[in-house]
Amino acid sequence: MFLTKPKTIMIDWLNSRLHLHYLLTYLSNKNVPQHKYSYWYIFGGLTLFFFLIQISTGVLLLLYYSPTSDTAYESVQFIIEKVPFGWLIRSLHNWSAHLMIACVFIHLFSVYFMKAYRAPREMLWYSGVILLFIVLGFAFTGYLLPWDTTSYFATQIGTEIPRSIPFVGDLMVDLLRGGDYIAEESLKRLFALHVTILPLISMMLIAFHLILNQIHSVSTPRGIVVKDEGMPFYPNYIQKEFIIWLTGAGILSIFALLYPIHLGTKADPFASAPYGIKPEWYFLTLYQTLRFFPPKILNINSDLVVNILVIALSMIILIIPILDKNSSRVLRSRLFTWLGVSAILYLVVTIILAYLT
Amino acid sequence: MLPIVYVLIKYIIPPKFLGNILQVIDVGKVSEVPVNSAKIVKFNKIPIILVHTTEKQIKAYSAICTHLGCVVQYHDTEGNFQCHCHGSIFDMNGKNISGPAPKPLMPYRVELINNNILIYKS
Image (cartoon, rainbow over all chains, first blue to last red; front, side, top):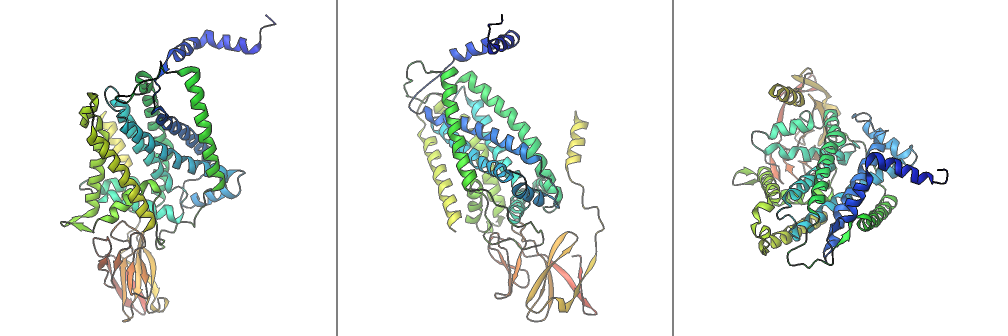
């Protein structure tokens, strides 16, 4: 008895109560298909990694952040200047948000081009697209929290966009702002969304997405030959995923350490908006699209036209598995491949144009 | 279930501004706003841009750009109001003359009494 190692005693104790051997046997027997495009799936795992960084650094920031218009800016300044490594935690939070959004986009497009949304994986696509919108919601609601000039006016613009939607536009703006203009009420509402509602919804959806991924496993594109029997989920796939997460941590550290995020001047609602104010890169396509349009199109406010386009496009993206019937029949669907290529080109061109002009 | 949904919806819709709504404010002496300059004042939580034109007139407009709600600024060299967010330009009568703004700036009635500038609720 005394010769038995403490580690073994602990594992036996846990095993007898949690039946972990069932889980390990299941994971060891599970094989992940491997093919020449498998590496694209690393971006799904990386998104999860950056999300976990977001949650952990977000909780740390909450220890000092104060969501009122009088104290928000000062509390962020305190985090950066006075709290040991506060600047690093804020920088990690900010950069992991950028990297998470980039990974979500790459993951979405890789799934799209591999037609991995085809039956029976439609629910994976639906939950993934909703998660994309939620991730953008995180970015939008978190942007005002430092209460500096850029964040103030960027949120003023962003929350004004839905106003042109008939019947519900004013109500949507009121719900987001808690009043007619961006003020303390808006800060509290966006803060509540950012730290409670969106994390709760996203965690449930991520769990749903991962469970579905376990049920259906990763997809194999049409006409691709699967190598051997695939890779055992435990320990091989988990080890591979661990290396990818470490790489992600390295990239994040480089950005966070070399390019820490600065705080602008405190927001003054009665000051003029600064010159050349632009949203973050993931909203530049919407920003540039708004700029393409004249104030009125056929006597209709162009903001309304853009709102309708955005809503229609979001709905189309969501129901792609229903629209692309060929993929579900394992047939070629060139039209959807070209639509995807066009979407990437439009995103790239509008982002470059928005930066240059 | 319906009463719960009703209570939740009513709770999250913000109540309208409950403070005293001013009908008029005194924003100071004419001499405080030199000719060909402007200043922004607060009136019922709204920023108002008050401008002293080169024709010695005092005019007041809502400083909220009618495009997406940024605060506009007076440019004394061009003699117009500009929104720095998306480049909308308004002339000295508040009319939208360039950029994406779809409507003119909302004007406010101004009166001068004993050299004091009074702005009235539009």
